[in-house]
Length: 138
Image 1 (cartoon, rainbow, N blue to C red):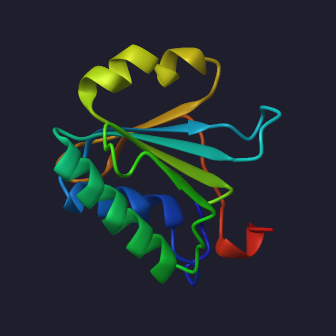
Image 2 (cartoon, helix red, strand yellow):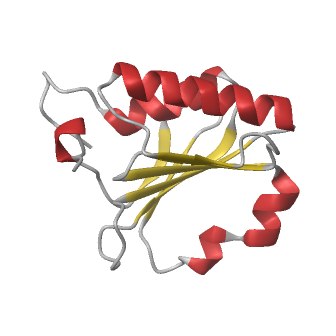
């Protein structure tokens, strides 16, 4: 995580936004060692399509307030898998059955992970840290 006191910890604030809209089973994957364009996949579960849209809206608003620009959004109308692409951070919001079906966690099982407690937003397993800021965006 970002250790500088004057910079916001983006990941923690995004996870807090997820929790504020009752997203759960939050998992971050460190994708920085893979030949991809993003550094982090944040994977979230939502109970229904309305909730997944509410989470996506709140995450988008929170990221914008942190100086992040949404590059691309997919799946919002359908709502079972919403992807928010902030270039270095990609947020996936799934309905449980869709998350289980696509199983991104297994697909990228070599990636270091960080799990977050559902109620408080505090991490339970820290295997890596992230240092991202909006200035990193191209």
